[in-house]
Amino acid sequence: MQKNSKLLKKLMLAMLVAMGVVISPILRIEGMCPMAHFINIVCSVILGPWYSLLCATLIGVIRMFFLGIPPLALTGAVFGATLSGILYRVSKGNLICAIIGEIIGTGIIGAIASYPVMTFIWGRTGLTWMFYVPSFIMGTLIGGTVAFVFLAALSRMGMLAKIQRSLGAKVYDKPKTYNKQPIANKTEC
Image 1 (cartoon, one colour):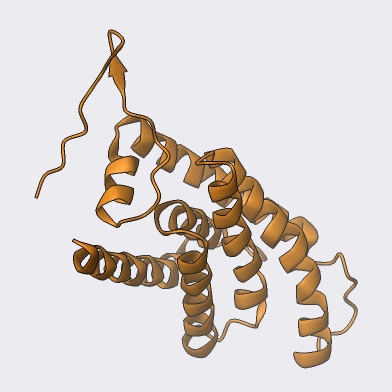
Image 2 (tube, helix red, strand yellow; image 1 turned 180 degrees about the vertical axis):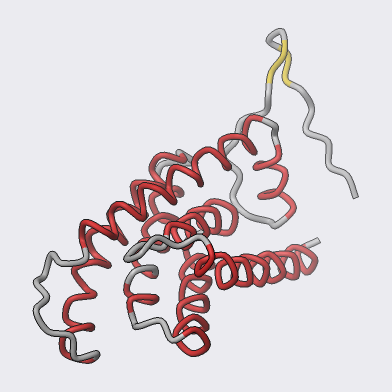
């Protein structure tokens, strides 16, 4: 079972990276990439903070090399992806904490970290430390809202816990109850 869950984690990671690369340029608002934040939060909740960091890094590198995106693809993703997963775990599965982690990590830390990268490495002039904060926060709010609606729906249906269990990830969802009797969580092969 352990070997199977590791393979499933890698497959899920590959699917999330592919989705992130494909949908980020399609569902994009100038200066914002809300679908990248959606992917970060979903990956954080389903796989955990370190897989989410890896996912954000892979998406960023692929977007930079093949789509010509500036280094914002990395600075605007890795901090939020990691903090989202960490806060989700520390809060013992609170989806709002995962979203707050993405907002703080990307909207504030990533936005501020983008200034020196874009100024000194990329050569952009006329920027301030807070230049990227408004657009990064708006992007995280849009992506975070979509992620919350999606993950909350999965949780209500009992699918979030089932996905997490099948991947060998930490499960925080409580069993659904009906008439004060827990409904058995069936594991199917």
